[in-house]
Image 1 (cartoon, helix red, strand yellow):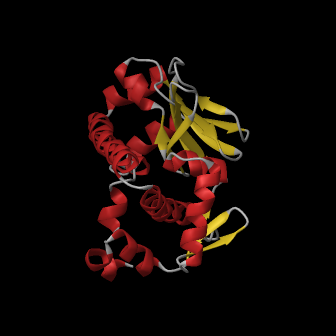
Image 2 (cartoon, rainbow, N blue to C red):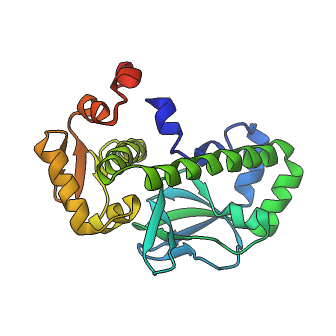
Length: 236
């Protein structure tokens, strides 16, 4: 199960893990604490990057607008995740947007200070390069799911991924706490069509729905639906 979930996890919360105490202190020295309100943008598509962010409290969504204006949600960030560095390192404008799903507490490092840290701490630079390569693979996996899987399969996969991520963020959250609009944008469908898929899984006894929170009730059953039960059963 862990290997499966890692295919859809950016793992940016591990970027500072290999640093020693002095290097952590150096990073913390440049961090500026910010409060960002729900619905506000950390950055937006075509904007000029000014630095990187690490979430300390709350969740944020990574999304992109299509040619028809429809939103495609690619990722939900949780506390300790680091974001905003792709465009900065590639010296390009942001290719996507990031919006606060709830009130956030954020640590911000400006572009100049971030580049100084990379120059002063070579292994930090190596960690960011390695993680960017991993995130490319994650995005490729997400695109493959969206392009090749039917709607019910897409929903089942993202329910697993999101429930695991949300429970890591806050064990008191019992299931996937996300608006229907955001969940529909995550799997590339309409709210009405999402409702039919949710009803299917609920009628099959695989999920429970409590207002906007969706909980996987039968993990083994949902894994069996995905054809992953034999490979992952021991980890459920």
